[in-house]
Structures are given as C-alpha cells and as structure tokens.
Length: 360
Ligand code: FES
Image 1 (cartoon, rainbow, N blue to C red):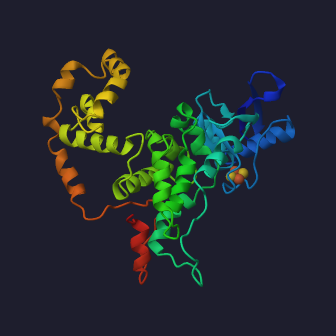
Image 2 (image 1 turned 90 degrees about the vertical axis):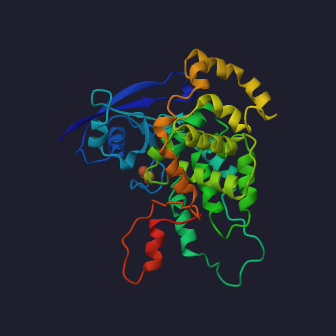
Image 3 (image 1 turned 135 degrees about the horizontal axis):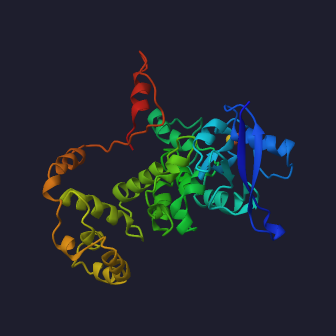
C-alpha cells in the first residue's frame, strides 16, 4: 500500500505558540480521501489534530481546508491527486482555509466571517403582498436560473481564496453574493430592487469584486460565485439603472467601450472615461485623487506618455468591433446557465431549452 506524507499546519491560538508544520505518514490507497488521511493520522498518531467534518461525501461542506495552497473539500480530494499536485516533493500540504481566523489547527471560525456575511444579504425570501391561497407557482426557467447558486453547500472555499477579501475584509464576498443572487433571481421575492440598491451602494458590495476567478476555481460544487456577482451587476446597472457609490457600473461601461474603440485597453483614457470623459466635472477631482496611482503607473511604465497619446494597437484589432456589434444588436440579453446540462428528450422540449441557457 502506498505511503503518503501529510504536512499539517498546527496552531492553537490560546497556547501563545507560533504555528508550526508537522508531518504524518499514512498507509492508504491513493483513491482514499485527504480527509481519511487526516483522520487516520488523528486516530493512530495524534488525537489532538483539529479537523472539522461530518458527511464525508462532499455534502455538508464542513471539511473545507487548503490543500497544496488551494481551498478544497478534504473529503472530495483523493490522496493520489493531492500527491501529484504537490509542490513540496510529493508531501500533501494541508492548512486551514484563508480569510477566516483559525480556532485550532485546520478548524476556522466560520461564524466570524462566512456566516456573518451570509446574514448581511438577508438570506431568506421577502415576498410582497399576501401569500397565495395555495403554493407559489414559479416558472421553470426562473428556478433553473437560480439552481446554480442554490447548489452552494456553504463550505467557505470561495471565501478562503477570495483575493478581494484578503485586501478588503469588509467585502461582502463571493459566497454571500451568490446567495444574494439566489433571491434576486427568484420571482417570489419582492425586494429585488432594494437588495440590488443595497449591494450596489455598499462600497464593499458587488463592485468590490476584482474578477480574479479564484472563487470559481475553488468552489467544489460549480456554483461559480463570480458569475453570480456579474449577474447582480448587470441587473443593478443595466436593468434597474442603479448608480453605485464606487462608480463601478460606469467603470465597466467605460472599460468595454475602451476595448471596442481601441482593440486593447487604453489605460490613459480609462479613468477619465469612467467619470464621463476628461472634461467632465466629476473626472477632475477623481483624476486629482488618482495622481499617486497615475505616478506609480508611469514609474512602472504601465502607462507611458507615448502610449497615452497614441495607442499602437488600434488598427490590428479593427475587426473586434464586429463582435461588439453582434452582441449589442441582440434583442435580449442571454445569460448562460452552464450548471445544468442535459440531453433534450422527446416530448420534453420546455425543459431541454432551459437546460442550455436562460435569460435574465
Ligand atoms: Fe461533509 Fe466533507 S465532510 S463535505
């Protein structure tokens, strides 16, 4: 039977000792999970290893840890897979999830961060008017649309690896915003606009995400929290025309138009265009506030005076505009829900259409 080495980060905050790494060798088949490896080490070598788990079947979401530097469910990760992905001479490096305080070894305080943020988005339906005499009848396509966010098992993996949250701990975060979409996308909820306004106006709300894609990669259930955040933005900015305090919606529009016009991003125009153009009254104070950023960009040659005045890529990307024209000429915005896939069955055409995509 193969032998695997688990390099586990040990830490007991109240001990006053610094965290340290401890190696445990376990004899298990490669198809067994990292969680089984940890539990074997705990059962046979050191009963004080702290790990949280319950279902052992990727359902309850309690065994989230970082394996080889990335958030994952320990019960869903095979030992051989973790061994192959090791960047530490084959040792499987296991540590607690990020962005949350450590309680003991691999156990983090989910209440302090994750659940607090979930509560922030009012995670229940807020229907308007009296309830119907019988059950609410919801269109099938509407439920397909929210199924992806409903698949979340609240493991906190996306929160752990969120780069925005690392910089701004106030960021509402990927898990909570995916949860918010679950209600904003539900036709039974009567507070769509209020929810979107709240999350747009919060400087740590939907426009605090920086598109790093880490949450999409970390999620063991394919919830793709970043995609749900982008849906919230499109609904807030395009459909409800909510002006956010971060100027995020206008910045996104300016970014897209910048690419449309120049083929590649013309950095020098992006900031003023985000505030309505170089000569817009709002742009002047923003440009002034951004002087340190502009100076850093110039010093690091991210922007050069030559490039700022004359964009060198414009001609090469002339055809790009045809793609913009094609997308912008659509009558209806198409929101692809890639979570549910299936084959079209005879006599079941309604379902088949919605399994491929749904419009918001
Ligand atoms: Fe339940 Fe891993 S123990 S998800």
